Image (cartoon, rainbow, N blue to C red; front, side, top):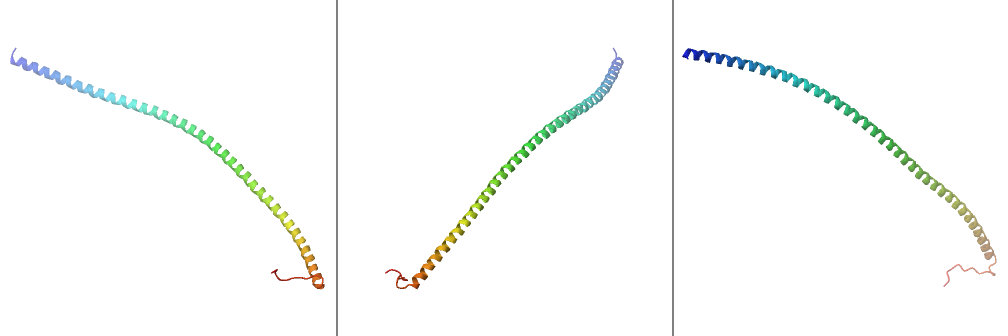
Length: 148
């Protein structure tokens, strides 16, 4: 083989290599483009499914939370009602105690008035006795001083 033949062969191999390399680059770019499109579609599909799942989970969680809050609110209102009734009962006992105390004070005042009336009678009796004693000085002797 001659030099020309080698050059021709080299030219053919170079051309084939360049053509193969170009086709390989084109196929690689095409594959990359298709892969990017596929990954983009899959990513969008995954994101959509994830959003739907999160939306469902969020709604389910919100529903459970609302039920729990309603239950707690009812329990709290019941507790407040019980506390109010308990407080009212204690207030009623205090009021009843004050009413009993007022009645006892009224009874005491009546007894005090009776004692006062009795004392007025005793005082009038002593005053009459004293006047009688002073009217009859010889019969009775009144010592106004302290005993020595």
